[in-house]
Image 1: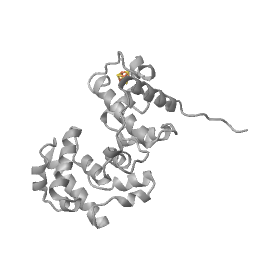
Image 2: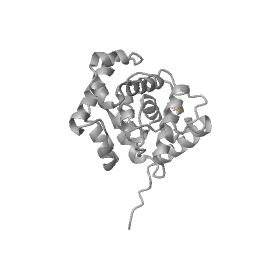
Image 3: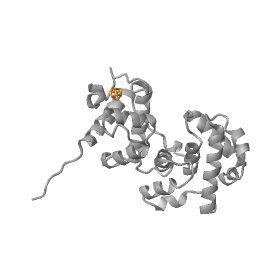
Length: 232
Ligand code: SF4
């Protein structure tokens, strides 16, 4: 006799969440033309600590526009990079991380190019990306999901992690990598890479509105029915 182990009940919660969040906030779909080159997404993440997305977008575009290629950016001294990264919250940290990261890719690949990752499974590509200086799980998953790679990988930012913890879907003290490792196996199998991207963007919206860092405003939260904290 074969036992029917059933699916993880958290998978159904993720489905209900997606439905409820789209109902509350509308569709948040990244247009195909906004899927950037993987190196652009990597650079954006490496310089982006504690910085608003719009500022990191502008800094990343400005670097490529001024120097013309990521190989040229890799040759710029850290002090000169720092002058160009003044929009970032931590310009000196961003400059050093960027120089170290681009230098590591250049040394290993001979050019600043991530096309070889398209031949790898997503999990293998993430392991490779995480060997680079300044690259952790959020950025590695972003390179695979939000770029032209368009792979199934969940991007976990601070909003996403906090909401999953408060909802009881991941352990209370799970860091980003642990949150990713817990969530990926329970993501609904029918979700595409675009669905995962939209899920991340919807959770970001929820974290900026109801489930804010200091105090959760559970009253009226669209996912309260499935949230452990919201039921307390
Ligand atoms: S019910 Fe409250 S704790 Fe739960 S996700 Fe909504 S705002 Fe956050």
